[in-house]
Image 1 (cartoon, rainbow, N blue to C red):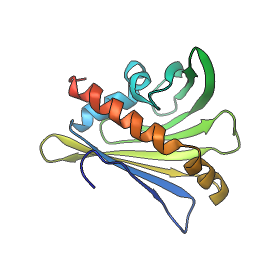
Image 2 (cartoon, one colour; image 1 turned 90 degrees about the horizontal axis):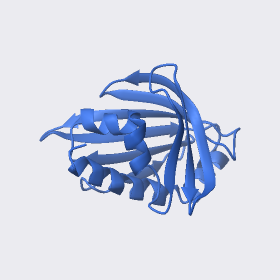
Image 3 (cartoon, rainbow, N blue to C red; image 1 turned 180 degrees about the horizontal axis):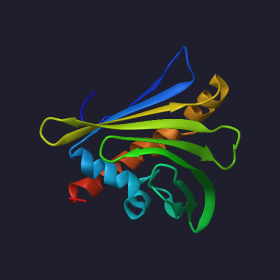
Image 4 (tube, one colour; image 1 turned 180 degrees about the vertical axis):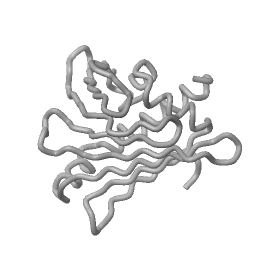
Amino acid sequence: MTKHETEIIADEKVPTIEIIREFDAAPEQVFRAHVDPELYAQWIGPRSVTTRITRWDPRTGGAWAFASDRDGEEIASFYGSFHEVRPHERMVWTFTYEGEPDSVALETLTFEELEGGRTRLRVRSVVHDFETRDGILSSGMDVGVNEGFAKLDELLAKGT
């Protein structure tokens, strides 16, 4: 895996998805891009959509919500709760697609410091069954993840 490839792993034994990606920025910068709503809206998701943050309280016990728009029309919305926010180290949140409210994912994000001021981001998403996990994987989420991380690279390169 090179520093700019995204690895997406589906465990055969448990309904999880793990996403691993390295960034040429310090953990503080990558973490900030996850908790600052203005920054998050700029990079999350595929290039074909814009993101509107509708609720954002990035603290342990806080809540969040955003909508994805294409050509001025809402195509999807997501919401959840911040269960744990440890600045620059770890974040645990629930992630729910409004169209599938019974399919809540529990996600743990870790921000690992690497040599040279770089970061390895690990996202581990746990869902309640393999059908849900496989549905997420087949939804085109890889396009959103890869294009989103490319946009995040561009933001981080600006010194954000």
